[in-house]
Amino acid sequence: MPTRILGIESSCDETAAAVVADGREILSSVVSSQLDVHRKYGGVVPELASREHLRQIVPVVREALLQAGLDFADIDAVGVTQGPGLVGSLLVGVTYGKVLATELRKPLVPINHLEGHVHAVFLEAHLEGKVPELPAVCLIVSGGHTLLYHVQAAANSAGGNGDAATRGFAFRRLGGTRDDAAGEAYDKVARLLALGYPGGPIVDQLAAKAASGEKFRDKDAPNFGPVKIKGNPYDFSFSGVKTAVLYYVRAHPEFAEEIEVRKKALLEGRRKAADLFPSCSPRTLAVISKFQSAVVRDLVERTLEAATETGSRTVLVSGGVAANSELRDRFTSKAAAKGISVFFPSRALSTDNAAMIAAAAYPHLLAGHLAPFDLNAEPNLRLA
Ligand code: KG4
Ligand code: ZN
View 1 (cartoon, rainbow, N blue to C red):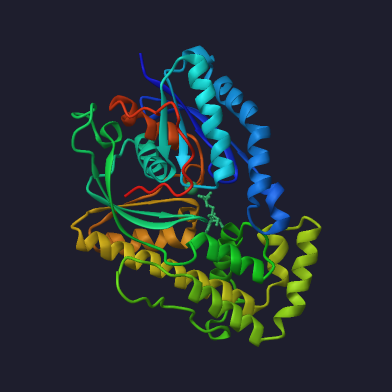
View 2 (cartoon, protein in one colour; view 1 turned 120 degrees about the horizontal axis):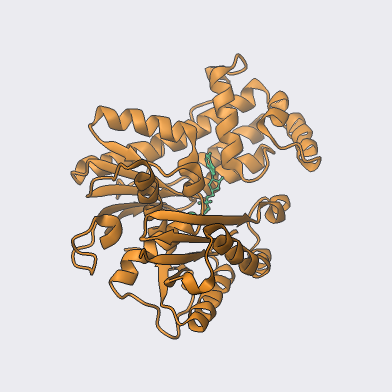
C-alpha cells in the first residue's frame, strides 16, 4: 500500500493542496491563485493574502481529496509548509495542518518551502522516468528568492537505500541575492513600464516577440548588465539592473505616452502580450529584451560556474522564474557545452504548489522528522 501524503502550501499568494503517493506519484494537485486579488496593487498585499488563504484552505483541501478519489481517512500523513514566507499566510496552513493532523490522528510533517522547490524537480523527473544525478547545484529563483545550493543525498535516513527523493537531501548554501530576488526585479520593471502583474510571464513573452520581430533594434537601448558584485561569486544582485532600467526610462520622456496607453489597457482588463504589444515602441521592446538578457545571463553564468567549481554534473532550476523561456534555452545550451545536465520542473510545478510539499514530506516522514506539538510558522526559515 503506498504512503499517501496530503501536502498543504500557503507561504505566499497561492493556497494549494495535493496528494502524493510515496513521494513521487501525484494523485492530485490543486492551486488557488490570489492573482486577481493582488493585481491592482502590483504585488502581494500580506493582509489580503492571509484573508484569502483563510477563505480558500478548506475548499482547496477538499478538492485535492476529491480529485485523488480519497477521504480524509485514507491519508497517511499531512505535510505543511512551515516557512519561509509571509507569517500571516504561513499561519493559516500551519494551523489548519495541526488541527487536521490532530483530528485524524495522523503524523504532521513540517516542510521548508525551499526544499519543496527542489523536490518539484524530482517529481517532474519521476514523471519522465529520468532522475537527476547527485550531487547537484540547485538554483531556486522566484519572486521571493534567488538562492544557490549544493545538493547531495542525505547521508543517513530511514529511506537509506532508496534514491535521493526517498532519502531526502543535504544542502549547503553557496550564495543568494543581496537585494532583490530575480522575480521581484521582473515585477518591478514590468510595473515601471505598465506591463501588468506579475511581470515575469509578460516580459518573457514580449522579449520573445521582440527577438522574432522587426520592431526590435539592438541599438535602441543600452546593455543593462553584467551585474557586478564583490566577494562571493555565487551571490546575486538585481537592484542595479532594475535601477538602470528606471534611470533609462526616466531619461527618455517619450516612454510616458505609451505607458499611459498600456495603463488604460490594463485597467480595461486587456493584459495579454497581444494586447500590450501594439503599444510597445521599439525602444520599450529593446529595454525589455536587454533587461531579461542581463538577468538570465547572470543567473546562468553563476550557476554553471558553481556547478563546475563543485564538480557537479547536474543543475536543478526551480521557482517561478524557472518558467522563463530564455532562461531555459540559455541554461540548456550553455550547460550542454560543459557536459552538465539541467533539470526544470514543468511550468505548473515551477511555481508554488503543494505537490512539492507532499513529496518533500515523504523522506522526512520515513526519517521520523515530525512536528512538535507547538509547531509554529517560521517566516525566515533557512535551508542551510
Ligand atoms: O515561485 P512563485 O510562483 O512565487 C514565489 O515568489 O514564491 O514565483 C513568482 C515569480 C514572480 O515574480 C513572477 O514574475 C515570476 O516568478 N515569473 C517569471 C515567469 N513566470 C513567473 N519570471 C520570468 N519569466 C517567467 N516566465
Ligand atoms: Zn516558492
